[in-house]
Length: 138
Image 1: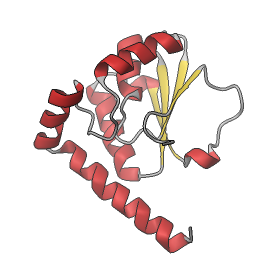
Image 2: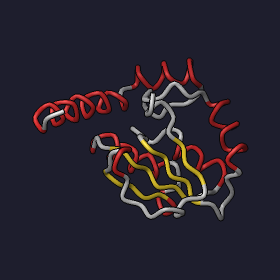
Image 3: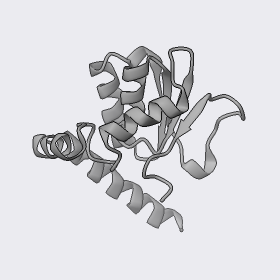
């Protein structure tokens, strides 16, 4: 994909993520999925809780959430388990919303945000205890 097409795609993602804060979107997401992080994933609340257990997330663990969008499920997992989380995605609007949500959820001090594509992550091998990528690599 050339640079111009890639930039258009990122602009479209930013517009999509901007809709995440609208009341109708959040109300609908709460009714359908049990969460209200911006409808950028089809992962349900029950699935996120199961994921926390399967990954063994605890306060001493570091989670990487690839393609986080507006922060789901990474921020929820940090809040529910006490783990630290690095949220990574390309659209800056999604990460901006996620950063605000991290503060609202009380996990801002345990959250970091990195603009990065899943195919070129800037992290050293072995840095993370667990990785999620709900709905991003499909």
